[in-house]
Amino acid sequence: MKDHLMYRREFSIGGEWAKPAGTGVLEVVSPSTEEVVGEVPVSTVDDIDRAVAAARAAFDDGPWPRMTPDERADVLARAAELLRQRGAEIAGVLVEEMGVASSQAPLQTGTVAPVFDYYAELIRTFEFDRVVRSGDHVGLVVSDPVGVVGAIVPWNAPVTLAAWKVAPALAAGCTVVLKPPPESPLSNYILAEVLHEAGVPAGVVNVVPGDREVGEHLVTHPGTDKIAFTGSTAAGKRIMSLCGNQVKRVSLELGGKSAALVLDDAELETVVPNLVRASMHNSGQVCAAITRILVPRSRYAEALEAAAAKAPTIPVGDPHDPSTVVGPLVAERQRDRVEGYIGLAAEEGFRVVAGGGRPSHLPKGWYVEPTILGDVDNSMRVAQEEIFGPVVSVIPHDGDDDAVRIANDTRYGLSGSVWTGDSARGMAIARRLRTGGTVVNGGIPPQPLVPFGGFKESGLGRELGVEGLHQYLEPHTIGVPPTLFPDTKRDAR
Image 1: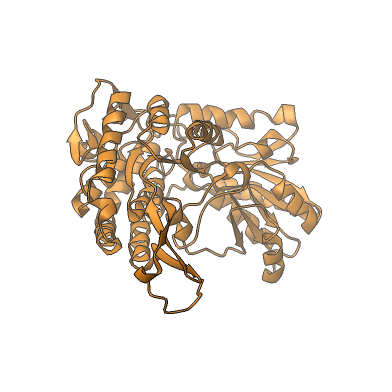
Image 2: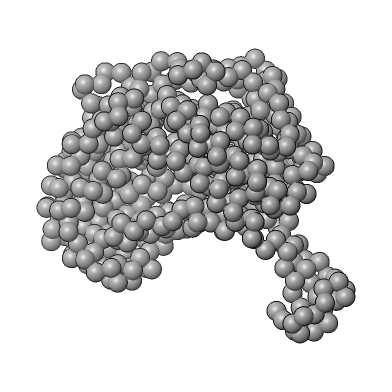
C-alpha cells in the first residue's frame, strides 16, 4: 500500500490541502495485525470552523448552487467515472484501516460510483420547479438546496455511506463538510481527491476527520443547516437532541436488529445456512444484518443444527487472503463488546451452539468466531440489543402471526426478510413488518434507485432513491402574477 494513501498530513478545506490547526495525530491501527498502518491529523474545533466557513462561502457566494442541474450532473458523472478507476485503491485502504475481507471490499466500493451516476441522471430530469394553479392564483414551488450539510459517517462502510450523503447533497446544490470516523479515516481522502479532480468548486466538499468532540461541534455549528448521520442509535439520539435545540434539519441512519422469518413451507435446510453466511458479511458489522433467524418451533432442532453446522465452515482469517469471509472486528473494544454479549449465556439462559471464542489459529488481531446462539427468547438482551459482530440468534415461532409479532418486537425497524415456498404469502407477511426494507425469498431491490432507512429507533429520513434527494431540498413557495406563467391548462393542479 502506497504511503501517500495511508499517511495523510492535511485536511481538504476550501479546495486545498490545508495544514491542521493543531499538532495531534491519529494512528490508524490494522484490526488484523494490531500494528500502525497509517496516520491522519486530528481536527480541532478551529479546523471545523474553517471547513464550515469554506462550505458557507461556497454556498452563499459560490457557483455550485447556481449552476444548472445539467452542469452539476456533468460533474457528478465525472466523479463516478474517476471513482470506478480508483475502486481498487479504495478497497485496499478499507482492508487495511477497518479489516473488511478483501473478497468483500469490492461489494462496498462497487456501490460508490453508481450512487454518483444515479443522482447525475436523476437531476437531469427532476422537477426542481413546479407551477401550481387554482383559478387566477398561481404558485411556483421551488426545490431549494437546504444549505451547508454536516455529514458524519461510521467506520464500517466509510466511503459507501459518505457517497450516500455527498452525492444527493451535491445533486441538490448543497455544500458539505464531511467528518470521517477516527477508526477508518483514510479511504475518504480518495473521495476528496476524486471530487476535486471531477471539478467540484472550491469549498463545496471539505473533509476533516476527527473525534466525537469535533463531531458535536459540527452538529451544533451555526453555519451548518443540516446534519446527515449514520452510526449508533445512542449517538443518533444525541445528535437529534442537539439539532432539535436549533430546529436544524437532520437525517439519521441508525442501528438494527433485523429478523429473517422462515415460514413452515420454506426449504429450511437451504435457507438457514445461507442466512448464517450472509449475516457474517463485514464480520457482522452491518446495521442491516440479519441477526435473528425465526424458525418454526416444530423444526427448531433441525434449524439450530443446520445453523451450527454452517458457522464453522465460514472461513475466518487474514482479510488480505481472498478466501477469507470473516475478518477481524474493527477494534479491541468492539471485540470486547461482542464477547460480553456472548458471555451472557449463563445469566440469560441461551446456549452457544457454535463459535463463541477467538480463532486459535489467529493469535493477532481482533477476531471472534462465527457464533450461533440457541434457546434464545426474544426478550433476552442478545435478541433486543445490537451486538454488531458475527453473532446470530435462532428463535422459535408458532406460525405466521407469531413470527410477525416476534420480528416487530424490537425498538429497531431497519430491515428483514421472509422465506417461504409461496411468494404471495411472503409478500403478505412482508407488508406487516415494521421495517424500512424487507426482502422476500432473496429478492434484491435495485439500489440506489430505491430508498434505504428504518422505522422506530433505526433512524429518521431515507437515503438513496428520489427520497434521498428530497432530504437535501427545501420547498419554497412563490406566489407569482398569472401573466408570468400563461395558463395553458385552465385550473390545472
